[in-house]
Image 1 (tube, helix red, strand yellow):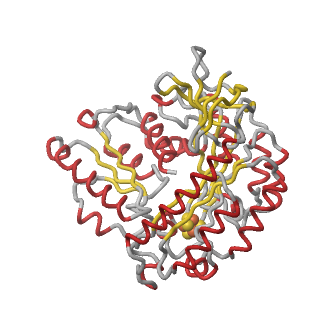
Image 2 (tube, rainbow, N blue to C red; image 1 turned 90 degrees about the horizontal axis):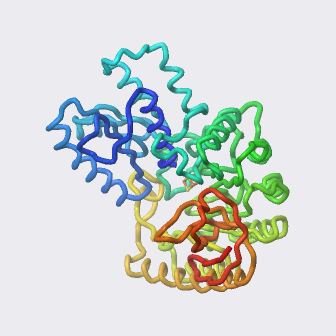
Length: 425
Ligand code: SF4
């Protein structure tokens, strides 16, 4: 989400006449876009902010913009006191405060009545900043901002605000614009992307949005994330199953395999419910891949409860498991209500157990691809090998002198490992 937001800030600045530099010392404007999903990320953001201070001291005309979840949607007085050298504070996904600041402070005579047009960047036309145009094959498109779910461990709702869907026309305009800028694949983003449109009076919903995007000429692939077991409905499954350019890869976090832990997390479903949804996905979308997220060591998680998660993963044999060790996030319900009582070494042990299990499972799943023909959309070249992904989101490397960037090419898989595959054309 932050990468997508930064791209949009970049192109908004270009509309004002700025251009990108990779050298911090050269910059007239520095935008620090922050993530605070974990305390360690927040500390890193503070560290980065402090490293910008000497530049501001040396060059008082430098504009420093702090953006993203560190700023949040309200109450940033403390931040303003702590970092007086920051000129502009912007909430996640909002280039507005920076654009206003620059157009008022800038002496380059930009007509302020144009401000609305400059915001139109969020409605379409130029989405990527110049240095990424024509180079980026896959891009992200935020469609739902914020989240209203309030899982007890999560800071996102308080930082990104309540759930808001972007109008379908904006999303479609942005997709068309991205295609003209060389993009072949878009991934629709939302904290619970399945809830797209639930707050829009006339709809549409995610399924109808997928149908509409499927008509966009030149768009080869469409993905979306993240799904939630309570909202991933039949209509979305059907859209994925019947639309060939919507990729059969579902990111649907379970977080824990024990019902009491799930209740304490306030996820809103049970282990049995999750198993059921996985089974349905496999029935309705044959050949699909499924990814999940798991947190180990949530407060109060006993060995027996952890083993429920272990067995769930063992039984379901999913393609990806993003694993995390629980850490207390100040400002969350979990911080107020529970004690972080699983020892760090124990969290690590549980993490490693799941990691080993998942490595074995995905190694076996990927071996099934050996000798098979798959269609890969190639994105870039890394150390002489082209890198791309299958519809099921498996990473594939191919050696060839041909220019494969942005092309969907059928390849034969010659080697597989748990994290990637090799193939030849
Ligand atoms: S669904 Fe839960 S974990 Fe995901 S963003 Fe919303 S509150 Fe956080």
